[in-house]
Image 1 (cartoon, rainbow, N blue to C red):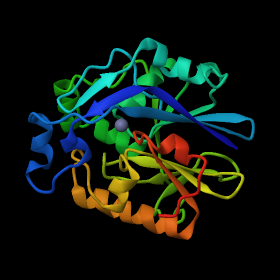
Image 2 (cartoon, protein in one colour):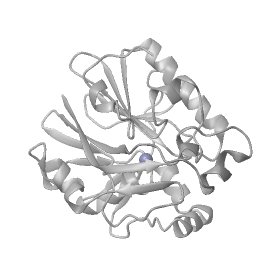
Image 3 (spheres, protein in one colour):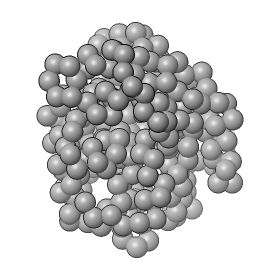
Image 4 (spheres, rainbow, N blue to C red):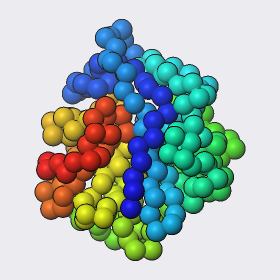
Length: 263
Ligand SMILES: [Zn+2]
């Protein structure tokens, strides 16, 4: 098994996004003037295993619009096709595409893929609610109309500390697990590599390891208690299995891909 980090540009986030307060100012602060942090990467991941390529998230595209708490720097030369070309692949080589959640920086690049894009069915249902559609319109972050999203049920029972899962490979070494919080149907993908390590492609379950250890909910998740419960589950899982934790926007994720980290 080989796991490649792909990068589709960077994003600058407000401090209130990365270091959200507790209480009623958590979400309000996103819309107030604030300091901007150094740019963080917009990663997605390509897993080569058993002669197949699985893509976890698809990155951002150049026509993304900024939102009050995020400024994107993505050129067409950084979109998914170029990121795959950097590892000698093209979108046509990809066998399976799965999204951690339906935010633009994870799904917009799906316009470059063919075939169905797997999404947790609860995430797909949430993205189609009136509440979510209003936010998509206010933030000018539409769900790409040309992409064929396909709902996926996490019907394979518990996996490690996670209550629900779904295997994506026949040998069970690529597994989707439920990590709700950042969005209601957010998932992560755990790959059991050739050394038995659990490489956890964590999407936006947290943005950094520091945030995970601090059990600090982010500013955008609808229910902080759900986010914190997920963080506790990840930490329990990492105690029971050698885990490499790789959030999508962590500057350290690429370096950590080579290391075992004990949480
Ligand atoms: Zn993201």
